[in-house]
Image (cartoon, rainbow, N blue to C red; front, side):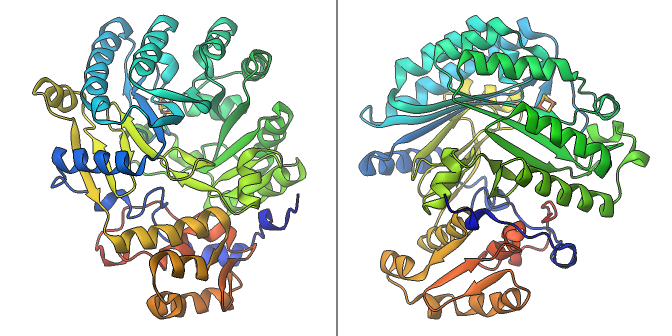
Amino acid sequence: MKLERHKVKFDSELIKKYDKQIPRYTSYPPATEFTPNFTETDYRKAIARGNTRQSPLSLYFHIPFCEELCYYCGCNKIVTKLKDKVVPTYLDYLYKEIDSISPLIDKKRKVNQLHFGGGTPNYLNAPEIEDLWNKIHQHFTFDKEAEISLEVNPQYLDKNYILFLRNLGFNRISFGIQDFDPKVQKAVNRVQPEEMLFNVINWMREAGFESINVDLIYGLPYQTATSFRETVQKTIRLNPDRIALFNFAYLPSIIPAQKKLPSEALPPASEKLSMFQMTIEELEKGGYLFIGMDHFAKPNDELAVAQENGVLHRNFQGYTTKPESDLISFGLTSITMLHDVYVQNYKGLKEYYQAIDEGKFPINIGYELTPTDILHREVIKELMCNFRLNKRTIESKYNIDFDRYFASALEQLKSQEEDGLVTLLPEAIEINPSGRLLLRNIAYVFDTHTPRRKEQRFSRSI
Ligand code: SF4
């Protein structure tokens, strides 16, 4: 495999220059554009359009509960130990949501991706997972090659549970390591000894999971570039198929749990940059390729192969090789992503249950994309996933003259070209190795929504 496409060049001066609050573009337009004006009727019509297109399906189920609070966590979760009380009720409502939405979806449409996320999906015990699994399979038809994945918390796993998941049909699994250092783990209230992490990954491998993915976070209390190097090296020894590396954003005014962190022990920005640089170098040395936006994968991983072939995609579940699926999500706070609409469910259990009790879809907000949005989304997706945009492909698909239509964006890209982030060719835009760490800044040039917003509530670009 040619590795050129995955090369990144770390340039701290450029990173500092382009460090600003920018969306992550997991959706375009970003979720800040979603509005309560979006209705159930809009959603029904969008599902019907998907039936006409016969788009394959990607399903997501959100399990919002966690046993303990990790102090860094900015996810939508409910921390409680009252499992017997909360789980049966939640599953009951989740099943009602499945019962109300699944009849609208043409049965001939096959599911090629299923994901359980959270919170903590393994908050559910084995019979509960199996029950939910059976419910889903009663309503949907699965492709034989479907990716069936879930996130787990290693603190609440044993070998039998892992075998159970694999035997049921899950073939991909992911979990958070964050940091191996016990001092860091204690400070963030997520204690998972090294032996536990090595056991868990060995059990996953023995069980035959096709893909094992782990997360790391840099920027947590007590981390230094030296201490984090050990974490990265131990992670490479664990040999996961994919590694996600997240930059910790300390936002205690928005995420109150973070007030429990020892703020005086947070590494300064310069140390964080060193950690970031060191991690990229170590992962490259360890045989991992940069996929983009915090993600690394082994060269034979299907994401790396798809990117090499210019056919990688991205949705709310992350990078994917499954093109143009309609992502339909169930459960609290979950986000549906169809060809031309985004829909987000309520974030509070009370509102979610109440809507279902009233016989409504538990929709909180949504967005219907215009043809212009769809065009801009494709440009952003191509650049962020495949690091190259073929202008002629876009021109023939959308019937535009690319250079004329995007004249202002191309003008803005000129300064990024001078900085070495991109190469502007007559027929293409290519992202150079130093631009691959600044994908969000490049995508931002094609964003017609965010620059108009007064309030910028996004994480920093690095
Ligand atoms: S990091 Fe995961 S396990 Fe920890 S509180 Fe957040 S969602 Fe729950």
